[in-house]
Image (cartoon, rainbow, N blue to C red; front, side, top):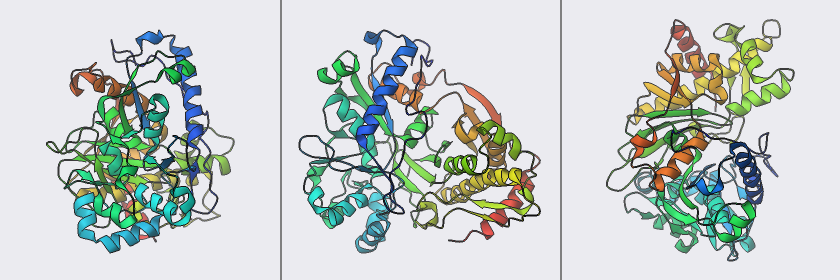
Length: 473
């Protein structure tokens, strides 16, 4: 990012397709942290070449990462086992048992969530099933912490990160001791805790030489992908709402009270600007099977089409796709469904009526309906999604999807020219003191388009009610 005008000097991503997920058993999902590092180096090489920016003008580094993953390191800093990533559902029963044994009052009042299928429960699975590996663990980290460690040699994490692993006690403002004692974890498994916006550490001389960068560049921001996506959209204050619809789909609203959902169908974490003095809690609705459903359809139903062409074909079908309903729940256990894993499905398909256009439209509508289902739960916690900000990317590139979202949520959708990488860059600049405050960091954030509910709102909501009434899990 160019600090003088807030513009993006260059961007790059690697690999060019979605990174492979290893699933040894049904419901498992693992990735090699070493591959993340190799991919980052490839992307960095590319972005440096594209920008042609002088390397000595790189002032700070920010990191955004996939949430909830478990990275375990030994005392030499080597990875003990592949990372158990966000969509792995092997620890559901462990988390549910912990919730029952520790009690709803402690879990929901202190941690604001059930331990569920989050990082702490994944670590307990390792302890129970791979004791020889667990015994080697020196520190545990989230994926972004690992990337920062590789850059700097410092093992660190943040309060925001610990809350996404359900390892933080909001009432005591400390590591969740009761949960750690219950699982049999030593508190010193947690590395040094640093502020989200701060000069946390510096690029080491060894890594700087490997990457062709000056040594000493500060790493001054890190955040999970969804808090960071909200930050990238300047969603920082109570009542503000962000959304994204990539592989998974998320609605993320900011609250200033320690609210919780009694069933943990949506989850509350410390937002990037949270502090004990000024509470800023991010309430997160996650739908696992959003963009991945669209990707599956492209591979198996519309292999000759790109995504833009798929959107055009989908719009040939009418609202409601002539009775065809799609449930986008085929990518692991869904928290919004109480950790049920019903799988994805098409309901009401008629071989004499429905064709490719109906399937593609019903899928986009079904994704939007799953968002509405969770947003209603967020509403019970006091967050009303009247304006939803999103980057103009992924599913929000589809006019059909974003209009359906506006109609079913009865909300204005605002699309912005930003993404998670720009958010992390702004966060890094803010953490390094290159911006004096968030207002200055976002003064050039550009709204590209707004979408208001239209004349199809009534019809869309009728279809949603049918979709909801036929939802089985």
